[in-house]
Image (cartoon, rainbow, N blue to C red; front, side):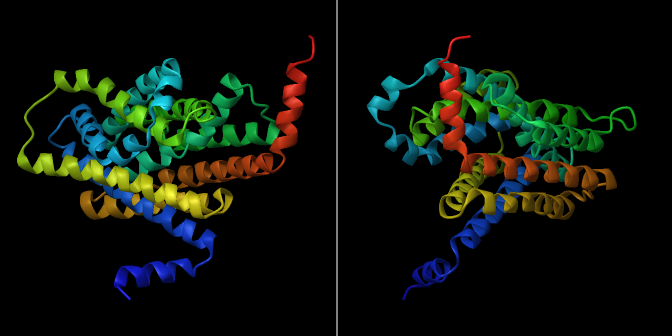
Length: 314
């Protein structure tokens, strides 16, 4: 039996949730490597140009997704929401790449973990989801963890940290729009459209700071795009084979990978407050995920009750 077939057979014998955790943990390692390359390239290339090249080359890696997009998908697409999401996500990407070029990788990762916190706020404001006291408390605690990392008023706040704090809620809003879009559109179509829009959004800013990349930078930006694509594929595979509530905890290993790679490549040692703040954010995100898991188990009754309420007068 070929080595690849042996590896697949051995993996198939592992429980699905363990497989899922493996893939998600691997995706975290890939994303941390991707961030390290962005940080390395950011020392010589403007992060806006890097973000454009990442998505431009990413279009090539996403060719299989474009093949799956059917003409009915294009006709039925909600282009208004896709445009709004593309503008928001493109802005968030440029802020994110700027943050990666300025602050330690572990700090970028930790602040990025506030995504569920901001998504919860957005779901209450825009999707009118009912958020009860336990989740509200988790949101407040998660935001406190982010402030503990940045410590405004107690330490000099790097512009990169501010950029990441702005990017996190933008990405959360992008995820919420994707949630709405996937109710009526296919997943591959939503992924493909976002890639096109982000490439278009970052194009003009990139041209304003453009300079001809060196051969090394061309290779590194191609590698950045490839790693980002592989990371998403690994995460998708993890959530495909395992239960979300079981495997998503492995996502937080990315903080460990980022700390190790950041120290090895750039001599970055996360400070005490980064670790404490990260722990608070992770605890908050895990609690929100737990509450969402319980809500999904009773989601049918909740949705039907909500629909009934909306159709009654008054």
